[in-house]
Length: 346
Image (tube, rainbow, N blue to C red; front, side, top):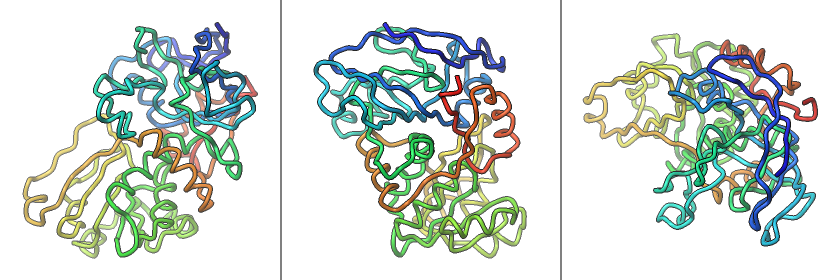
């Protein structure tokens, strides 16, 4: 067994405290990672606040993990001590079902094991990346390219793949008009990916406050959704709209901006249900869809693509004792654009 200092919460909305947990002893196919940085994802906050149902407490959040291999099991072949690696939203799956065999472990029919707030196949709770160390089976570890700094790489393990995967799946690229709803932790990466894929990119944000930043990230156009004329001007405009915000929207208004056969894809996940009119879909053969993240193969592809195109999140590094404050700032949208915890400050 391996002891690790962690940041944990004892109950919903409780403050973080420094505690200690035991990681499992290395199995033959395991990798022990010395965590250098762990990103803060809005889903961490939803979970720690009990907004997505009852969580498993004590809870150690974190699924944007970047670090260095400290030890490997006897059968590990892909990684060696000293390698720069990452771990994202999942740490195990059956490896045998149709989706695992397709490289889409997130849809595992047995049930994928999440990095935290989950039970592994032995019934033990999983603890995430707000930790100094983690043990993960080799299949769920990815390599961080040398040109990506580890602190900047950590948010890519969730925010990056969450936006890259639907853009690839719905064929964002040359000749396609893509809109990104929201310019936050997810949105500012979505803009960069859509631009690098060759699409014409429009940002739809509540205000004009982030216009110059959006253009710097690669946007071609920028509109404020607080202006009702925006929806009239952009009617029937887009092939794909990627909604990155975790707030309820006027779904019908956004659907009206899609062309025939256009798709509105949700990756933001508000705690309250949305509603829409069926005719918003029927009349233009539009689609309303959702996307989770990508599998391990696509996550590695995303990291390599990010390194090739110079894509990285804009981050604010914080110490371990600043996480409670960071949560409140995320809720207030007071971050440009992603918090990353320096785990050396534990």
